[in-house]
Image (tube, rainbow, N blue to C red):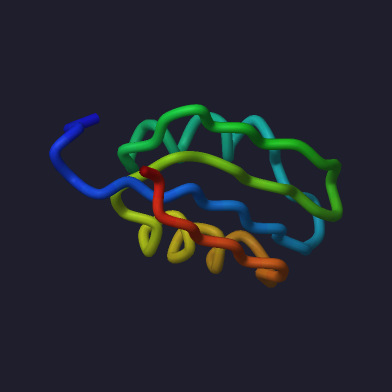
Length: 77
């Protein structure tokens, strides 16, 4: 990831049915610049946390997976 860009800590809880945690772990770093990705949960919810310069892209993807709740975005120093 380019250290010259502003980076954000993102944490999102997604609720849905049949959430595939492995697909989240694979897709997010494949298409979105993300570091320190953590995906936990089960088939009914997932908690996604990462560091990224593009938090809106993480939120866009999560919106396609299920209903987002407890969205936190903070600037990394």
